[in-house]
Length: 433
Ligand SMILES: Cc1ncc(COP(=O)(O)O)c(C=O)c1O
Image (cartoon, rainbow, N blue to C red; front, side):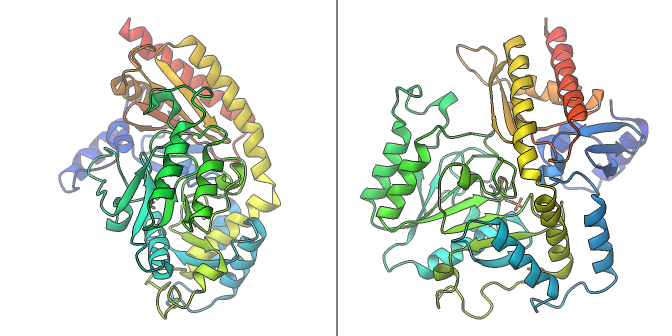
């Protein structure tokens, strides 16, 4: 239950605040006042294990001391000098060069996921051959809420879709296969169709894709999917633009999810896991794209907050800890534990139609019945709320609950969090009986 201090504050704020909050916050009705490591505290003093890591931003947990120190030190020194160079920015470029695949050797900095997706689209359009005026995207992809990013969104996700100039490709949503096939006997036909689409259209400049689709509920492609599509893009001169705003920074067990699937993107967008929740985004690209004369005209990477010294300090401190503490290896170890525990829950609760994930990114799909697979958003919502009442924060969207713990979480705390999820399921299913 939301405590009395929080209820009072939420009621007061609602008189002024425009509606339109995420399902998570509208259903959750909590007022958080502090985060330390993997634990949040609300205004009434209740604590929560945060298995949503902020909004997949807190790879190091909340208020990591080294990030706090870097930000505090920077806050006392310099906040904004437009996009002038600073010593930290040069160091961050070197750090990225160390963490990213070799071909991604050129960088530009921004503030949000949508902003960096727009920057990627501008770069693609600047270097595209005449006549290549369309951009490919996958069904169930999500790329942000600015106009350009919304044009890549092809499914019903609130009012955020504005599919305009982009062509549609099948995503690897095996649990709800659009072709009514089953892996592996399907031969990954969805990829074959995307491949054919790419081959037939001579006017596509780039495919913008999430290697693992996040907002749609952690859709993890089967082996063979990306190989076929990436080959086809290469063969037909279509740039590969990996939107790793959500997956980048180690979340799937490699710095880029693209690496896990053998994709060598030409451009990559990064944001959530990069700067511990401080607004920051990076575009990483091949130098022949980002240094192309048309993509690098004066001002093309500049904006008021792009690469501001505070964001750079937060990103540099975050990534230094990720590298020094070999946290990406930890992602795989903890991810295996999560896989195991969630499989146990799925075996116990019929309502968990599908449980899937990679690294520390998991999706739980709630259904009314395992045969019809009819989505059960009301159950997902109830479990989400029951978990909060028990002291666990997850993330919910429609009939899917997502788990994305901090990389730094203690094994015991992760176990405790999953046990709370089990108790939430037990409570809700008990009430429904
Ligand atoms: C893959 C992907 N791209 C872009 C965005 C947009 O990021 P932002 O909300 O920072 O604009 C998101 C946000 O969740 C995302 O998951």
